[in-house]
Structure formats: C-alpha cells, structure tokens
Length: 154
Image (cartoon, rainbow, N blue to C red):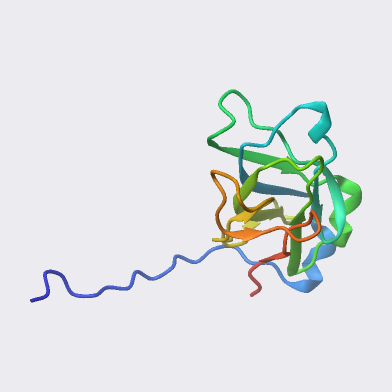
C-alpha cells in the first residue's frame, strides 16, 4: 500500500554564472560547519584551502566545542581571480586536533550584484579516526580530501 505517490519537486531557477563572467566576480564567501575545533595554541595552524590557496585558519568553535557551528569566510579580493566554475576545498590539521567539517558551499557575487551558489557538499571530513565523534572521510597526512564546489553555469 502506498500512502503518497512519489513526487519530484522542480528545482527553482537559480542564478548561474558563465566562464566569461568569472573575471567580474566582486565578492565570494565560503560556508561550512565545524565541530570541536580547538582554539588552544598547540592546535593553531589548521588551514582552509580554496583552490590550493590558504584562506586562513580554520575558525575555532565558540562556547560548546562539541557542537556543529556555522562559519562563513570572506574570500580575499586578491583570490577572486583564482575562482572557476569547478573549485576545490580542503582543510589541514595541526597539533593532532580532533575536529570535523561539513556543509561546505561557495557563493560568488556577479558584477550585476546577484549571488550564485554551489550546492552544499554532503560530505563530512574528519581530521582523525579513533575519536569519540569520528565519522565520514578521514584526513590523510593531516590534510582532508578535496571537495569540489561547482558553480552552476548557464
């Protein structure tokens, strides 16, 4: 017995960006969630890498570390020219910190002011195995696997 028929909801039209428009990007933001990122000095140096370039340190959790917290990083203006339709994101570890990330997405602002957003990556990247909260894909040699964040083209 089937209670409800299977349905597919059409995806609403969303802004896209053409390769020719990449040079006109005026801003970009990277969004992800962190879990248990330790701010202590011995764990400093963990990096967020977009297309192989550092955006800075992985932001530490505030308050309760053992909870998912959203982080949004501005991509520096000098790195906007390195963005493409297919971008890669990776995280590094330092000091053996046990942490994980999920919900990664990239948004860019076109020259006309519209924001174009990638889909959210549904992966969980975990810095170490054998940890109480370990899950997902584990880092190798203190670096996560790369996550592809593809901007929708026309």
